[in-house]
Image 1: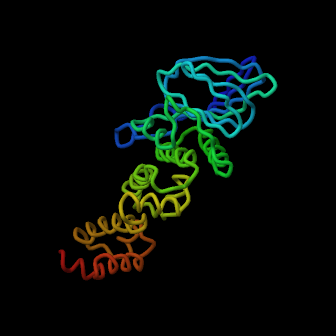
Image 2: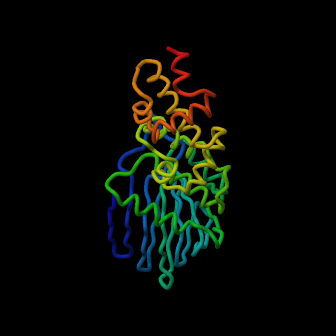
Image 3: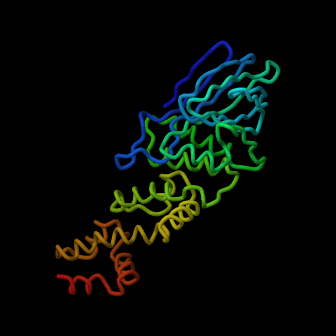
Length: 281
C-alpha cells in the first residue's frame, strides 16, 4: 500500500503492510512492516523518540545523526538503526541533501537480529560493503509492497532477507528457520494445488537455491522431499479409505500424474501404491 507525504523540506513514499502480521496466530520472530523512500530538498532536520525498530539506508547525500550525546556522520553506503525508546536528532546538509530508504522491522526477535549484523543502540551505524544486492532487494520489496495486499509469508521473508543483505552475505546462518517456516506453512496448507518448488520460491520471492539452503538448514531435507512427504501422507489416507483409481488420487494430492505418485511411493515406501493399499485395507 503506497502513501505519499509532502513537506517543505522533504517528500516521502511509504509502502506498508496492512495491519500487524500474524503467523499461525502468533507474532512472527521478524517481519518487514514498512519501506519508506525519503527525498530531502535540503535543510532537513528532525528529532524524535523512536517508537520502534528501523534501519535507514543512505543512497546519497550527507548529514548527521545523533543519539543521546553521540553524533555520527552519515553518508552514502551507510545504514543507521533506530531502536525503540532512544532519542534521535538528525539533519542533512543543504549542499548534500539526503536520499535514503528506511525500513521498519517488527517481531519478537528484531533486536537480536539487528545485533547479529552488529547494530545496537550503542553501535547504530553500519558501513555496508560496496558490492552487494541490497539496492535490488529494496527495489523488489518496494514493487511488492505497492500492491493492495501483501502475503504474510513475503513480509516475513523480506525481513530476514534484509538482515542477510545487511550482513553483506547470503550466508545460511541468519535465522534460516524463519524462511523455512514460511515455506513449510505454504506446503502444509497448499500442497494439494500442484505447487512446485519453483512456484514456492516465487511466492516467497527468493531463489530456488536460497529456499533449498534455508529449508535444509532448518529441517535436514530439501523442500521437494518434504512436499512429497506431505502429499504421500494424504495419498495414503485416500488409498486406505477409498477405492478411487491412482490417477484420481494423484490429481487430488497434487502429483502431476499417477506415474509421479508411483515413483514417490517407491522412493519413500519401497512399494507401489497398489501394493501399499492391499496391505493397509
